[in-house]
Amino acid sequence: MLGTRVRALRRRKQWTVARLADAIGIDKAHVSRIENNLKVPSVATMAHLAKALGVSIGHLIGETLDKSEIKLTRAAQLLQPAQAGEPALHHLVPLLHGAAVRSFEAFIVHPGPDAGQTEVRHGGQEMLYVLAGTMDVVFHSHTVRVTVGDCIHFPGHLQHRLCRVGRARAKALLVLSND
Image (tube, rainbow, N blue to C red; front, side):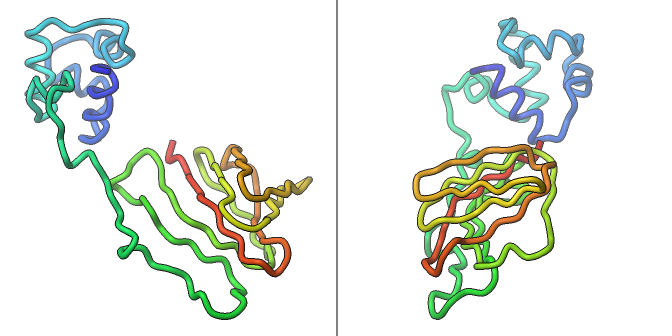
């Protein structure tokens, strides 16, 4: 877990492995081995890592908790789509997103009845977990129908569109990686 924490703290500072290595005076390959849990750093190296990353050694080894690492969005803070009538458009309700999350974003998506003509492409990965209703994920050459409890995952670079099937409201958890 030490390596995972070092990597997360380094990324939070938006530092490269090389920049962290320079900051603490060791080879970047050594930092990489630490981050991949292939090497346990000496106490002196841990002290240098903690100082460079702006945390205590206790935090670095998991004995203390940095509460800023925990992100919580309360239900009352979420923007809810209009509940009345038949929604004609897709609605996205952000759960976790933006710079504070870094590696992924999460939304509740309420797809409209029409996939439209615009196909979406993005970097990273996409995962969709259906919470209610039925929807089609329309790719360039085929369509995948998903229903309650189904989970679909695919590279974001694939052109795709989303639409609900039938009149019943559909709702899914949408997770996008920012890799």
